[in-house]
Length: 263
Image (cartoon, rainbow, N blue to C red):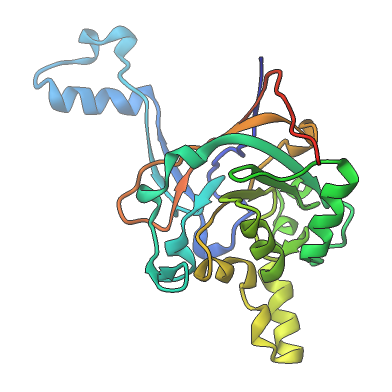
């Protein structure tokens, strides 16, 4: 069995997020940790501790959408499935978070390309794979190689409303991308909206969740190390009360699997 890590590393002040989402990590190493221990054990001195050192601890300030994370329907809208209350991340069905995976390689598409339902249908036909309910579909967007730079925010293709709904109609509940967003880069959509005033393009992939419940992972990595299919994905989110997303460390598990054939 081989396991491949599909999560990026949460870092201090990464340039991969806009300023309003900046991550801050305050590292308290063993010397500073000794002070905390001495505050607990009143009267203790440095000579009472191994080499005068205490514990290491970190204080982290970040959003639920920092690093690799799983978005819940509550992120998209207060309702899902055309009227039902949208589920938050602590309500995500865990049975959906462990399933067979399939990689769709759209990394050859230009930045800002709007992926359509037809693009997905043609791709699965080309690789000879028939989607089945609860498959986890992971998209190589072309953005991954820019991780760690400000360019990451404007790189990669993104999913349209009809492409997202097409996947959901096949019984898909969880999808993922190695881009910053499931949609096209927000800055590029904003530029297009400024020209056209076409409101249908605003966050259209996310807003598809108003019609049908689904969850998506963003800021994934190492999708280029996976075969098109023949593996499983585990992506259990951190359980944050009433939150719109939860951090996740998805992994691909490559055992011997039986792949369904098209009829």
